[in-house]
Length: 158
Image (cartoon, rainbow, N blue to C red; front, side, top):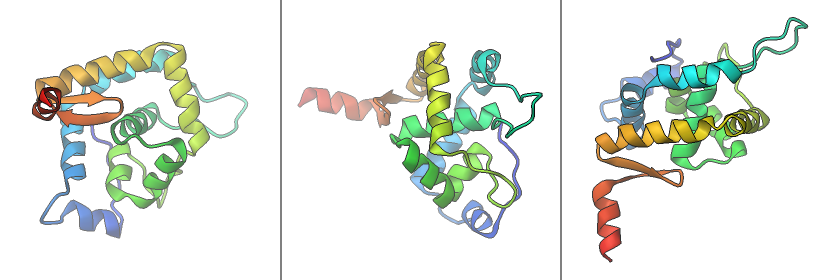
């Protein structure tokens, strides 16, 4: 369920680079492996809807979910996540943000989204499904970091 974007020069350069970084490869694996529709259906009933009074509209649910998963994967604080979205083209592309036309959520927006997931016990469900899918590929998420099962098993032997 990739979000189509207009590519900027930096994005175009990175998209068509001859060698992909480990981060880029991992994000492609997340894109194809995770049950995005399931996650969205869990969160959609409790996610904030635009107000009839006007004001700033909420960010699209899928954008916020993708940001949340990036934060978990790379153990990024809210302020650092905001900076990474500004600085890192592959992160912006993964979450579906275009710097030319779009807004970038701020750290308070990330905090509010995480609290929403925690309040409705959705974060645990998402983590369970993420771990299940990644385990099938030989990867695990432990305390915000992904590691190969073989690496974890090696550490246990020490």
